[in-house]
Image: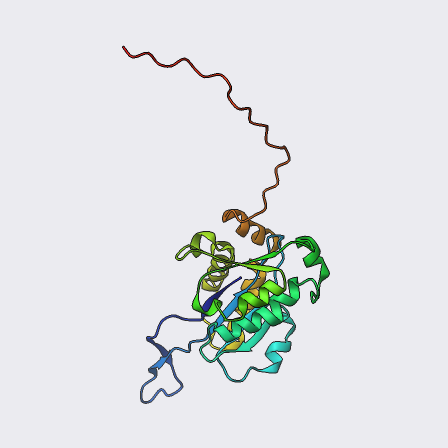
Length: 236
């Protein structure tokens, strides 16, 4: 699991536009409209993914945007800052991740069967302060979930979402036209996620970071201990 902040534009400079007022000043400088949202992506090494959680700092979210068929894999949550917080991370654990993998509450029992009823699920996250809620470890322990915190400054090497998923998403967004409406911005993000969250790319993200179960078709040969000592080297 990891999150990434997505902006429709990173520039704060004004742009020049042609207006209908041709008598005074037909070309005016207007500030660029900036949209910002945080996408929380959760992928598994079997190539599947959970619904993407979108942290939106707007206080009101249009219902038609949520109900739109193009956004069926997106869930919108209001965040004052537009970023992940300890409170939102706790809600993500309780309402999204744990119900998906817990043996007793799993909506899709196939997820837990793949893990194994007596095995622990592994949640890999970075060490951001927002990922360390007070009750987080206790919630996970009760549901047979172990948390693995990645070392500092290693996400670009060890975090599957960073290595493949987010890289492909942002590469796609850079190729799109500058959106002037929020709905168009969300549509671009949704399309980028659909392209990036394919089973093949999710598999690649774990393989490139070497976070994948080791299954050798041929057992390792038994190593025989050396019983005979070589003749010691004689000094000249």
